[in-house]
Image (spheres, helix red, strand yellow):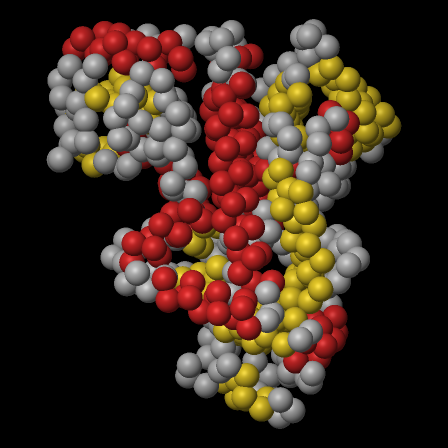
Length: 495
């Protein structure tokens, strides 16, 4: 006898997104979060990449936009100490929103609860055991210790994941000795800011916008908001950083002094945070009935990627878990979670480790490497490819039954005309259900899919294929006109 369908450990963006997706798929999740209230230490400060499209497909993007307090970032982003400029593209291959993680978590929690998920804060998982049928978590709560049982448990409990440790899953990789300190501060009196972003300080004189490298580390300077400076320092420190200890303005100032050899005047802080980079990936994302997602499964040594990858893990996993629990999953469906998302995590590690190699060198050879890399990015195709790599939009899953160019890719948001009027792929995917989209009037294809997935007849300008079979996570399982291929794909994903 189980208490819920899925126990989720951790109420960060990954766990909250997973809970909402499970509810859309008809499963009953319970989130257990050890902290009694949401953490106040600033963490991630933005969303970027493919997760923005997925949030739009779920009808959440406009709500997320409502959380934005800073201007939309320009279509430029740092990559290992060089700058990737996407402003030349009419449709940039990497988009971002400045959203504080605490605000995002509140929105996702409200969304999950509205859908029927339960969140218990101040409830820490202190033990796990599993058998052939279920997982039991021993939980320490405000009123004592108790147990809760479910068919599956997912650890979304961060880079130091107790769930991962209790499941006996290895987490190989590297923790780099560099400590990054970030501050968004108001511009104080006595500091001159030039139109090009350079600043003039009383003690150090002119400091250029961008990256300043010294023998002691790296100082980064920029601004996204009028009247606010964005400052970051990077120093090597062999100790381990405690993310739960808030950073102070004094700590940031001391770090600037060590890196630059002098003081930079700092106004009142808007945001202060500190983090250390690791490049690690769980050996496997599943151990029996225990699974991992988000930082518990992978740590990436770069900014702007982790939330995108973690929330994408959740969207990939939820519909497969629900199908397994509800007894409608084809054999091996849940195993595809590890196969697909471990490969996606490894690809995210590839580009983020490349950033480490670019940014950590301080000798003349490293400077030459960055200069050559920057020149290569003047080529639009190189900039586009790198941006899609960071965004995760180049992820392609193997899809049995279809050799079409769209198979295995994230479905484009086609504008559609139906008998009921205009709609779009995004509208069709809002309920998070699989869809066969018939764009060429193919009743024999619809007949194969009826009763197994939602079927929609529509017309699209410059249709990419006669029909598309779209999974709940937005990936094209099959495309084309071949009935045998569609039959195989339906059997693979939606028995």
